[in-house]
Image (cartoon, rainbow, N blue to C red; front, side):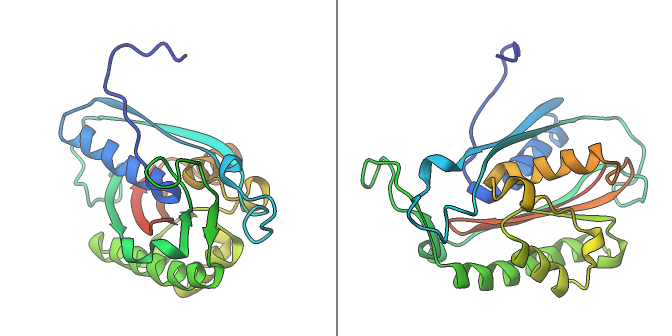
Length: 229
């Protein structure tokens, strides 16, 4: 549909953390010389796996898609300098022992049906705030930054309680957090690019801004990416 010439194309499945995983892989392709320009898409149709009789999940999720393009650029900047643009670091994790608190009870290798989202809300909240805070702290430490140096936090739009809980743990004011969950719901891998797009369109995100992306999803998977626009 995009009339893109022959090139590698593949799917990455990490659910709500999918965009963070994909962006990290795309960055490694570019920095290694394996690609010059990469289209990274986060797209989800969550409505197809919702149990519409389960009000604890069906009211939270939405369908959506968002994308960014990253490309190689010649620069003499030190990657650690304030003028360096692009992905500064990425941090990816998964722990299958926690899969039961957020999963889909179906699939080709199990029931043969798509299944529905099953979530233990309190357990997901507890682990999400803890794991998000931990991976964000790791990103800050690796880049020798403090939380108050971050211009914007763009979290996965899971729900406002998790977003506020993570920001509070980081002592980051909500004025520096991009929130769109009230407009789109939880669109899984699409939520971060949708939030980035909205914040660029309304003028909040600008070239040169230091931005931290973070997400947690089923599996459990979680991760963060530090970048300068």
